[in-house]
Length: 294
Image (tube, rainbow, N blue to C red; front, side, top):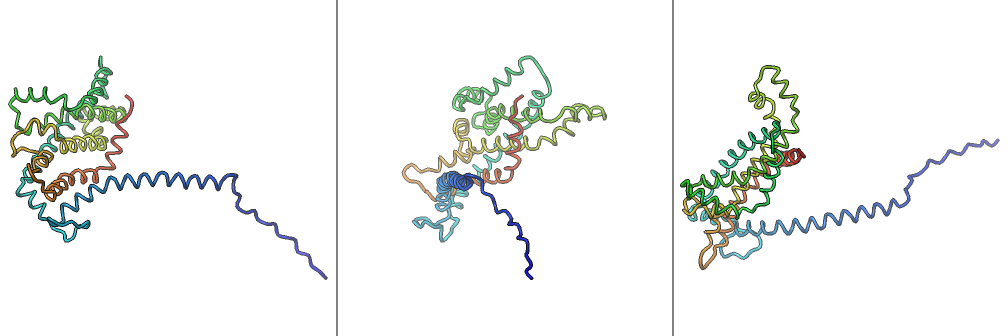
């Protein structure tokens, strides 16, 4: 007796859409088209920093491509003999003062622009935006005459004021755009609870502005730290030089100590790198939230 078993239905295999293989190949090619230029750009960007670090930590007279043996004599020369300790202190003072002044003024002005309507508001915002197209070199002579009249030439306060004036327009635009995203109903609820406008601002609005404040403060600090033109124009005494001007004056008339110069470059770059490493997340959030249409 023969028993017949019903044939089991065959499960369907994976179905490949028409052109699926070609689509994957195109995606693979497109990835190579992205990563190869990015890799070349990264190599082109990092090689100068690598050479600067190698020159800074290798012994004088060495021609090795690798920094071995490592020595910190160049940093000692830069810090003690070339006076970079004073330059670093001056740059830090100017950067922190510019950060505080720019942030405080932009915070007050940005709140007024975001919460109050007045005649000529759009023209004022457009005028602030247009000031960003003015190069800093055009401001040198007017600012120098103002500082000479006020007796601020050869003073670090001249650099602080110049940096604050230069950074305020962009800072006002960023903070005002960020405050517009904060619902006014939050402040109104605080008013109902008995808070005045000033207390409601500090208790409700200000804690929400952390990304914008970080973005504005970091831009103000980094710009003042790296600015060479204002420091060269308004300060003539070596005891009041900032790091960029000190780097320029460390070049000899007939010879250049490349090891000391590279060590000075590392000293100048470290604060900026640390600032970006710490506030990168807040910086992106503050820029994206503040760049809204009013």
